[in-house]
Amino acid sequence: MLKSKEGERVPDAVFRTRLDGEWREVSSHDLFAGKTVVVFSLPGAFTPTCSSTHLPRYEQLAGVFRANGVDEIVCISVNDAFVMNEWAKSQNAEHVRVLPDGNGDFTRGMGMLVDKSDIGFGERSWRYSMLVRDGVIEKMFIEPEKPGDPFEVSDADTMLKHLSPEARPPEAVSILSRPGCPHCARARELLDARGMSYEEIELGRDATTVSLEAISGRATTPQVFIGGRHVGGADDLEAHFRGR
Image (cartoon, rainbow, N blue to C red):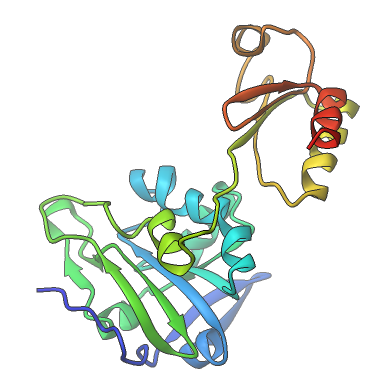
């Protein structure tokens, strides 16, 4: 039975990380003292749900969390530092801090270390999230103990709703772009200036001109979509922001 540790202090542990090619140690005190931190923990880097949904949504909502008093968002997994760093790079994680709990010390202290030997994982973390204020766990969302890898309550939207029921998640933004396109660069600058995160779909790498025309009905780049609506190119995006 996985038990909530609400009202308790986080475990004392040391996360052995890699930064700029060197080993660095981050203690629980370093991570939590005097700060409001949202933590989410998952079974493994590069695994499907973790990569497609869990981490990306926290990354997408990072600005909203910070606007509501969260100092840092941390993802913890029982993986080594090399794996976690490569995963963060592949996920373009700029706002979520990934920490390796390679020996499972922190996860064990949380009572969330589980045996996944049946799928060749050994001991890993159960999926959960928590809100920690100055080292004290205020709220935990623990996934139900079901077979497989349930993902029902530790998501970013559930945590945000708990933190601030009135907070509005940002609209999803995508840009279809082309390498070396100056108008694409201008569109990115317009979004960056407003603190809007976006997914970039680059022609020649992620899509083709056929996809561009099929999705947007146009052959030029960039093509910007906000909240499922087609805005258009850089000039259209600028006009869109002026009209707000």
